[in-house]
Image 1 (cartoon, rainbow, N blue to C red):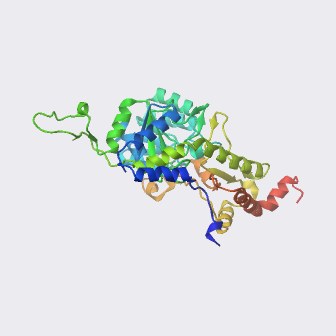
Image 2: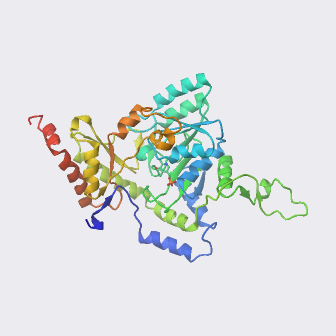
Image 3: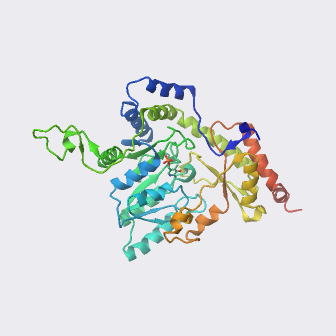
Length: 402
Ligand SMILES: *Cc1c(COP(=O)(O)O)cnc(C)c1O
């Protein structure tokens, strides 16, 4: 099979303007710690209607410093969704906290607020309430944030939105990232995500103190602001001081320039993803292939388009996965429930812990969706799926006459 016939599940779209923006930085005075990172932060914050943006080397780093800035530490609990990338849970482990998982809503694949409330009630009785709850906007569809926020007021936890999939998405008509229902929101700019900076991430907040803390943590805990200094100058020169234990989680100027240029195309990118999704919606409507349902309060960014093979379809997830993969359509599973990973099973999590998450895992396949995907490529994906399902689909379409 020729390389050109491979269709990935996702990939970046890079324009000549994007390339020029990066080249311009290469010819400038600063490759890091210059003016482009703050410009990118301001542009994203303004797009999202939020006060502060803190750009970092990747979303995993953003999640880590978000947890630290909220004071998460040893003995605390962080709860997240099992249907997410491992980074949503690992950020809590980095802080020495304990991790637990709240089962998903089978329709949206997002953390279920009813399951969350049930778990909160029993955690309260045991004195083990979470310090941080970290909902994930799976596939780009925002979670039921007003319900989760209401529970946070009742049970006293902080909220970090893992919006790695969801820049460009909307919740109740407002942009994801505005932090109306959370303390901090995190975006990823990995190449498979909605816009890219190669590697990169950002933490957004309306709280100036949290923003300041995260700025400190992304650069060694070092400040050169006189007001921050703990050691008073006297007759020594203190032009910077390390006042906390931080990291080198900085984003480069090259990455920020790419991000700024990509941001201009964000709405167009999301519209194109919607067009591809609606082609799939139509192709599979009335068949035994289940397409991703959208809650009326949400406008997804369609980072992912998972189809589900239902038990009645007569085909298996494995058959569909292998057929597509062998034909060069590099489909993927999003996700294996995090607690099923060997590292987490060693911590004592058991198979079956979150039944909805496991049912979803056993039926889902993310089929390709990316901006440069051609209509021919979309047809090829649909034809391949229909070739596997055909007899059964036809049976359904003809009212079971076979
Ligand atoms: C991609 C992703 C991350 C991590 O993003 P990086 O920028 O690669 O660190 C975290 N959470 C979710 C849900 C993701 O999809």
